[in-house]
Image (cartoon, rainbow, N blue to C red; front, side, top):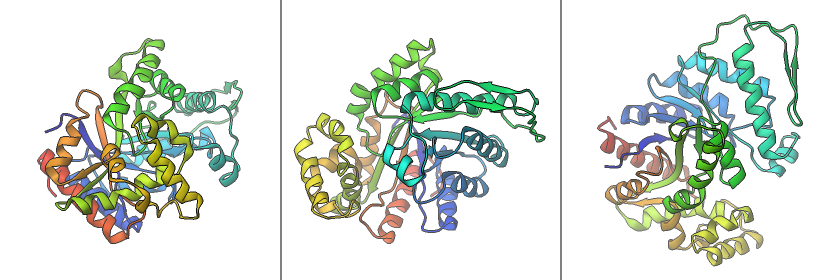
Length: 346
C-alpha cells in the first residue's frame, strides 16, 4: 500500500449527486474532498460538500484568485470554515490571462506578484476583521484600504490553510515561500514532480526560511480503474487530449518525450475537433505516462510511485470526451479502490 494520503475530487451532474459522491468518498477514507472552479462556483460546491460530510476536510482546487476581490474570497472562506467547523482549505490559482480578462473582465497582473499580494490581503483580513482596526496595505496589484469596518461575527480560525496551484517555476517557488500547500493540475507524473516541481518548491521553502513540513505537497492524478485495460485507457484518453491541446503545456509534454504526440493532438484541435473530443488523437503512451489507469492492483502500484515525493494524491475521475454514465462508473471504481486501500467503506 502507498504511504501517500488519499484525497478525492468528486463528480456529479447535479449538486445532489456531487454531495452524495463526497459522502461516499469520505466513508471510503478520502481525507480531503476537493472541488474545482470551471463549470460550477468552487465556493458554492464546497458548501454543498460541507453539508454532506462531517470529518473530511473540504478544499477548493482551485478557486480563481483574481476574479473575486481578496476581501470577498476572505469572507467566503470564513463562512465556509464556519459551516464546516474548521474543515475548510482555501486552494487558490491564477488561471490564464485570457480566462481572466475575456471571461471575467478581471485584472491580470504579473501572476506571481499579483497572487502574493492577494494571499497577503486575505490573511491580513482574517487576522484583523473583527478588531475594527483600519487596514492599509499597499501593492502594485491589490492595494487594500478599509476603514470603519468591523465584522460582528466570530472567526472559527484566523489562519485557514491556503494552498497554491502551480506548475511553472516562479509560481511553484511562491507556493514554497507562502503556501500551506501546493497543488498540481490533473497531469503530474512522479518523474515530473521529482525533477521539475520539488526543486523549485524546495527553493521557495529555503528562501523563506521554512521547513519542508510546512508545505503539504498534493499531486493531482486523473484516475481510471477498470479490469479491462482498454476500457481504463479509453476513459482517460480524453482528459489527456484536453490538456495536450493547450500549447502552454508544450514543455510538460516534451519533458515526458511526448512532444510529437502532443503536436498530433494540437493539429487535430486546430482542424476543428473540440477540446473535449480529442481521445482518438491520444496515443496509449501518453495515457500511461500521465495518468493512473488499469485494474486496481496496477493503479495501487502507480500510486506507490509517489511515495517519498508527495504527501497526498488528489484522485479525480475522467470527464472529458466520455458520457456521464462512464464518468459515474469510473467514479464508483475509484471510491471502491480508496476503500480497499484505506480500510474504509465503499
